[in-house]
Image 1 (cartoon, helix red, strand yellow):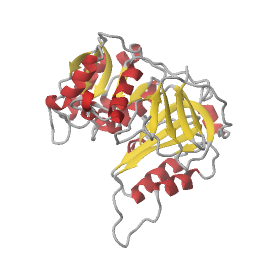
Image 2 (cartoon, helix red, strand yellow):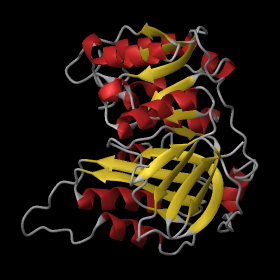
Image 3 (cartoon, one colour):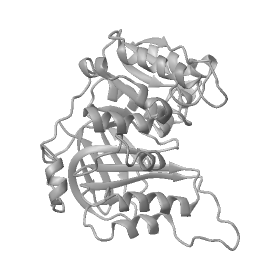
Image 4 (cartoon, rainbow, N blue to C red):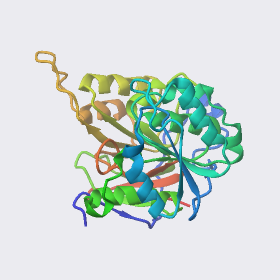
Length: 347
C-alpha cells in the first residue's frame, strides 16, 4: 500500500455532523436543503464512446497529448481532437473566439460523451460567458479538468446543477503508462474509474493538524484563486452545506491569506459541511524583511475557527502527482479521524 494513501471503489456509510444553522437569506435562496439536493449526473461512459479534447485555457500540441490519446483509447474510448489542439495565441490555446467555438462545438455535439481539457493555465474565464449551454443541459456530458478549468466547474455547478469531473488533464498523462510511478498510474486510472461510473473512495493517513469529524454533502471545489476570482459573478460557487475542497500552487502566503479572506468575507466558509485542503505547493518565498509569518495551516484555521465542521489537510488533490479524480456535484461522505481520512462517494 502506498504510504500516503490508496484508492478503492467501495463507499461506506456513517453518520452526519450537525451543520451550522443557515441564515434567513440563505434559507430563502435554497430551494432544497443541502442533503436533499440532487444534481444531474451525466451518463457514464461505455466502450466506444467519444471523448473530445479541447483547450479552453492554455495551449498544447498534438505531440503532447498523444500519451493521453493512447491511454484513453486503451480504455476502449474513441478520441475527437478539437480545433484548438496545436493552436496558440501567445499562452492561450488559440484566440478567445477559437477557444469558445471549439468548446461550443463539443458542448453541442451529441456524439461526444465527455470533454477532456488539454491543460490548464489561464483563459476559461475569458470565454465562459460566451458559451451556450442549451444543448449541454439537454444532453449532459462530463467536463474534465482542474486548475483554470475550475471556472467551468463553478459555472456549470452554479447555473445548471450538473456534475463535472475534477482531475488531471492531457498534459499529466505519462509517456509510458507501464513504466510510470504507481501513484501516477493510480491517479490516471481514477479518471477511467470515475468516467465508467465506479463508486470511488479515497483513504489517506490523517494529518495531525486535522479537525476530526464526519460530514455528508455534495462535493464542490477546485483551485482557490479561480474560486475567489468568480465571486460576484454568475459563476460564483454555492458552498452552503457542501464539502468544499481547495488546492493552489505558486502563490505567496500573503496572497493565499488574501484569497481565503475573500472567501471568508463572502461567507463561503460559513455553512460548509466540511473543508478539504489539498496540495498547496510551490509556495513562493517571502521577500527578506517582509515575512508573512503564517503557514497555510495558520491561514486556514484562522478563517474557520468559529465553525465546528471537519477540516482535512494534505488531501491528495491539486498540482501534484497524487491528484485523484473527484466527482463534483455528487454526494460524498468525509470521515476525518485521528488515524486516517476517508472520502466516499455516496449513491
